[in-house]
Length: 268
Image (cartoon, rainbow, N blue to C red; front, side, top):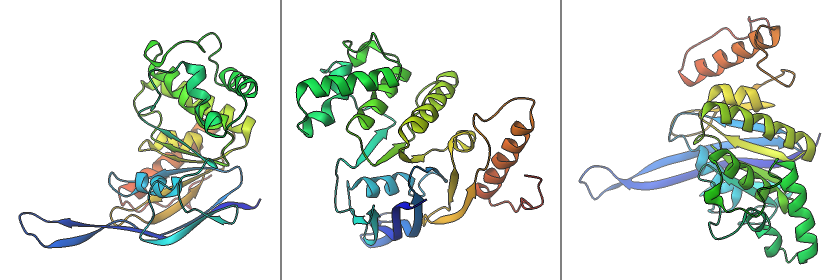
């Protein structure tokens, strides 16, 4: 499988004052971050708060440029924001004055897709995320889980090559979160998008990922990459799958808490 994304030696440094002194010192949000992501792969990034996870997605999205290093998608260098990347954030970021359908069509309007074609595309994605019957409602009329489905549909509707997701399910309750995880996997399988997903939740990472990238504390870099070779759907209670799932969760927990664990000796 060819690589979709190549990140090479990304570093992002900020110069901040410490205490009352006027002297500034370097603070590395990212340092020498290098990662290849395959076409159609689902990669989840976990790490301590402040380790640069969201900074990484900001650089990938093109919202700001790293101090050093490079990113290429399909061999083309990322120079700024573009419609080849969709971005789903924790805060939904829906336009309150637009209906659900019109929110989903926003990127299509930017691409100057004709109105009739926009309607067909938005209708397909409304169906894909299970919001038929809600297309003419406004964001304030929806639950948090439904708003996040709209955000996912909007990000997918203009057909980006890569979907970036920054803690997209953190604001919903546990039951809704599990449902959204299931929905996301179903959509991912149907669309075959390349996804980079940031979370603090280890169980969520293992439930979703092909590979989990574990980051260090500042400066943020890769501590270890853990392939998750579990069949989907995952977390089947009372089965061998759930036992192996727990082993992966414990492995990543140990990495994040700097505990040495004999993962290789575990029966995976």
